[in-house]
Figure (spheres, rainbow, N blue to C red):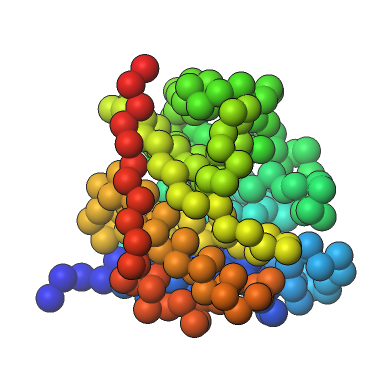
Length: 290
């Protein structure tokens, strides 16, 4: 029997609804990955409700929890690390220390960094020190980075002017160390308003994917977390990067279709669980010729 991959997911958690680990852990488990959730924050609900309660995990708890796993002899079984929302730059540095510790046990570990920088208009804000940490430190350690357009623009210090400009900006980020850049959500002048677009850039090439943009009174939260988690899970299960992108786009679309049908603000992960594992649709990642 083929071994089940193990993934350490270090990101936020909400008690109600779906964001961070509570958006990605269940879907990753459903596709066949054993997930170890480590919550950087625990909030009552995501911050776009405008009010919440909860606490940020002390940064020294992250390496302490990693050492606890090492103490029972399981750290070498970790195949990947996923990091998302950070409550502070100190948390980020603690995560990198954890990644270093795990790679000492298993050099083949894949580290995917989802560089969440927040969105002030949506009530999600991170400290400037977190943005600096992501660009100056995390980018040189991550094997895969999954920014959205806002984060890619922040890394580049400017706004993209075209799809090819997005590719160029991703290549600059690629040169900082990652082996792959997945832009989870593209936004550039001239992009069709009825489409949702994604971009994968590696040293070997660039691929562009387009799917329909679904309408919501309020766009659900956690879609990016779901995307990063499913993409990494499929890579661990043996998909190529391009195949993982295509599967992820289809699975996320299925979740959004169910969410839209239920007129829900929160992602309908449970109702869509069978479609996460067996999407009915397929979207092709098309190579970009430069």
